[in-house]
Image 1 (cartoon, rainbow, N blue to C red):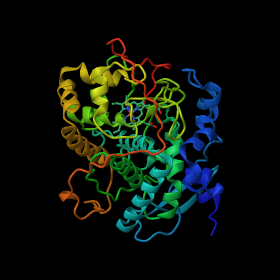
Image 2 (cartoon, rainbow, N blue to C red):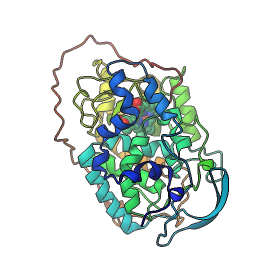
Image 3 (spheres, rainbow, N blue to C red):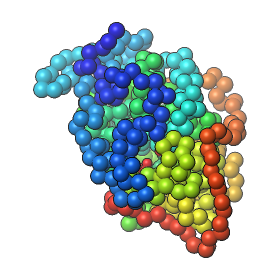
Length: 413
Ligand code: HEM
């Protein structure tokens, strides 16, 4: 049955009209349709594209209407709330369901299929991190404290400069969200991120679920809680931001290792090259600059490559470089460059902790999807993307470090 547009979430309001499958929304098509509308125009230039930026701020891009989905779901947490719709105020029953274990397991299989067809592992990881990474441990009240609460689905937060491009990740996940009515956005973002890490050959993340969603855009955090890639004092900045979340130096370094996956795109963040020999053939939309050669493979090459610092086609942000400059960070970065098992162990713990930041669980102890989670050993399945056709011709370069320069000031990840 067709739901009224009024009751659709912002993402649904933009996507469901097209009745798209995840396959139809594969990364490269998304990029063409949205932020990538301007990619063609700005190709091979490091300047941020004005069309892409104006798209991100276009009031027509997404329609922020109601808050949570109003569909009936099994065992929901039901909230009554007054929702502002246009200029009228109406009282509606808003469903902010806690997720169901059977649906979570099934959704995980769908996410695996989505990953196989779209190679969107990196952006799903970034989505989960940006939803959780707004947490402020000094604020007790939920959802004011920020964190993993699904607030990133609302236009107001998607428009934060740090979140440029993440609308594409939401669109990729929307059909899965539609299929599993009892899974909250907060859980879906974290499930997608953890599944992407595991499917890319990374460690098994000891996750729990049951996160409750915020109900409306007025509950989104203010802009500016996520880190900037090029602050005047990168070590101090990273500590300010991550200590605010209750994370320590070891966790900062371990989590930064997620940059073993993915690329930076100048038209989104202002960082990185428009394309390199490692990204000019995709998979997904070609372009951007990766931190590692095999940027769909989760391993410890991020640390090894920064340490070497010899390949100008690989990205090193100022906040990456500082991991080998600051004496306290360096202890961990050196260890991870040498010992992948140590990296995997610390990464898995830090990722799980990040995914729980600020979250309100229903039931309070959370839901485990895998009964034997605690007994599971690290998954060491190497990821091989069939469509990667990198013609890697190694040319030794002068032994200097390349640290990326921003094309725009004060941009955040
Ligand atoms: C330490 C502070 C961090 C900074 C300054 C930072 C900065 C950035 C920037 C500038 C980009 C490029 C975005 C774009 O142009 O599309 C990016 C991408 C990415 N970030 Fe971070 N990041 C940080 C921490 C993290 C953490 C903690 C994670 C995950 C645990 C993470 C995961 C990713 C991933 C996977 C991508 C690639 C996305 C893609 O290919 O679409 N980052 N980050």
